[in-house]
Length: 126
Image 1 (cartoon, rainbow, N blue to C red):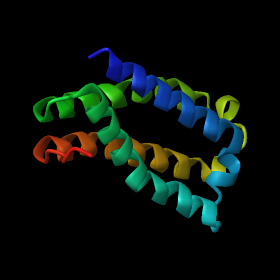
Image 2: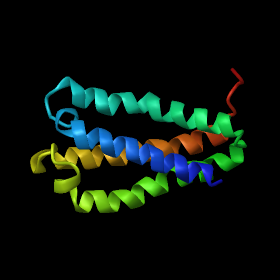
Image 3: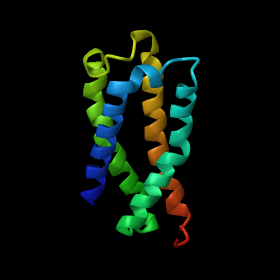
């Protein structure tokens, strides 16, 4: 199961870099990009989790644990990035930082919910 924490780290790194360089535009109230950033992760994260489960052949009963292993590295690393957010995410203003935090919790909740959902529903082979 070492595969899943590694995937969680890669996912955290990709999201951190995305928001470091383009966070100011993605988390700007009143723009279409904020709606897209919140909306596109709704199908994106469950699709990614299902792809990981299929790639590794993870049994349905092991999928909640796998999802937890994907989420935890990013949650722990975000303790640091959020503590030093002015340095790590210079494009996100203090006034809009709460929206970024909400986006993070939304993403982590979707990862965990995907693990629960796909543990009760076996996916049909493609």
